[in-house]
Length: 83
Image 1 (cartoon, rainbow, N blue to C red):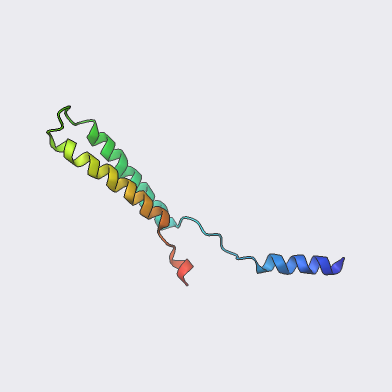
Image 2 (image 1 turned 90 degrees about the horizontal axis):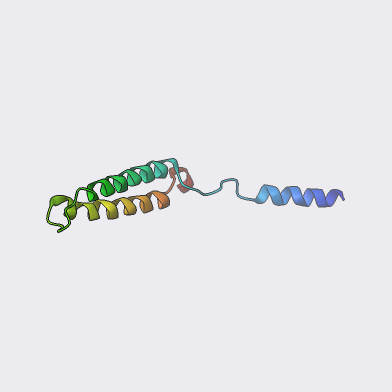
């Protein structure tokens, strides 16, 4: 009985201590990306139906850039994980 408890304790100690997740800097990047996406949708409301103004040309780049920024924020590594 005592041996089972010792085996369980050694198994629990051998598990990795750190759980991987989104770093704090990555979360900040994600929030910036969401802000860019929101700005892109706001600029999209200012387009004309023919698509001949500046807002029609800028809004797709803002939207795509915001989504790419969110993706970068998700995979951004934490500095402590490299040590």
